Length: 451
Image 1 (cartoon, rainbow, N blue to C red):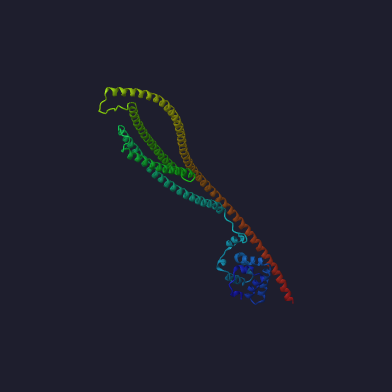
Image 2 (image 1 turned 120 degrees about the horizontal axis):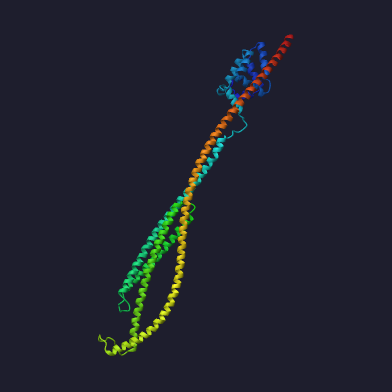
C-alpha cells in the first residue's frame, strides 16, 4: 500500500496523475457524492506531471488555495494531512519563502563563484607564489652569505700567515745586513758567520713566496665570489666584505713593499762587501806583480824604498782606476738610465693597474651604496603604494558591497512581485478549471440521473 511507504518529496512530485489518483481513492468515501468530488479533483490533476506537481505544491504551501479546496469537501484537509505525513520533516516544515528561494535556483546550472571570491582568489595565489619565490631567494642569499663568510675567514687566515712570513723575511734580511756590516772590516775571504744568516733569509723568502701565493689566490677567490653574488646577496653584506677585502689587500701590499726594500738593501750591502773584498785582493796582487822582491810590512814598518815603490804603484793604480772609473761611470750611467727607464715603465704600469683597481673598488662601493639607496627608496615606494592600494580596495569593496546589496534587494523585490503575480494567475486558472470541471460533473450527473 502506498500509505505504508516512506515516499520522497521528489517522487511525489514526479509520479504523475495515476499515483495521485490512488492516494485520493484510498482515502475517499464510498458515497456517490464524494466519489463525484474525487473524480472532479482527479480531472483537475489529470493534466501533465508538471501541472499536477505544481497544483499539489501550491495547494500544500498556499493557505488561500488550500482553504478554497477544503471548502469543496471536508475530507480534502485529511488528504493534505496524509500527504504531509508522508513528506520528510525538512520539506514539511518549509514555508512559502523557502519555496520562493528554491524557485530562484536553476538545478542544471553549476554554482557560480561570487565576485568577491573571484577578486580575492587571484591576489591570494599571487601572494603564495611571491612568498615561495621570496623564500627561495632568502635561502640562496643565506647560502651565499655563509659561503662568503667562510671564504673571508679563510682569506684572513691566509693573510695572517703571509704577514707572519713577511715579517720573518724582514727580520732575516735585517740580521743579514747587520752581519755584513760587522764583517766589512774582516780581511778573510769568507766568514762562517754569513752562512746561518744567508740560509735563514733563503728559507724565509721561500716560505714567504708560498704563503703570499696562497693569500693572493684566496683574494682572487673572494673577489670573484663577491662579483658573482651581486644579484643575490644584500648590498650591505657585499659592501662590508669588499671593504674588508680592500683592507687586507692593502695591508699585504704595504708589507710586501717593506720586504722588497729590506731585501734589496741586504743585497746591495752584500754586493758592496764583495766589491770591496775583490778590490783589496786585486790591489795586493798588483803590488806583488810590480815588486816581487819586496815584501811589504814584513817587519811591521816600511822603509824609504818600500814607500817609494808603494807610492809609484799607487799613482799607477790611481791612473788605471781613474780610467776604469770613467769607463765604469759611463757604463753604469747608461745602465742606470736604462734601468730607470724600465723601472719607470714598470712603476707607471703598476701605478695604472693599482689606480684602475682602486677605481673599480670605488665604483663597486658607489654602486653598492646606490643600490642600497635605490632598494630603500623602492621599499618605501612599495610600502606607500601598498597602503594606497589597500585604501582604494577598501573603498571599492564598500562601494561594491553597497551596490550588490541594492541590486540584491531590487531583484528580490522584483522576483517576489512576479512570483505573487504568477501564483495569482495560476490560482485563477485553477479556479476556472475547477469551475469548468464542476460544470462537466453536473452535466455528467444529470446525464446519469436521466439514465
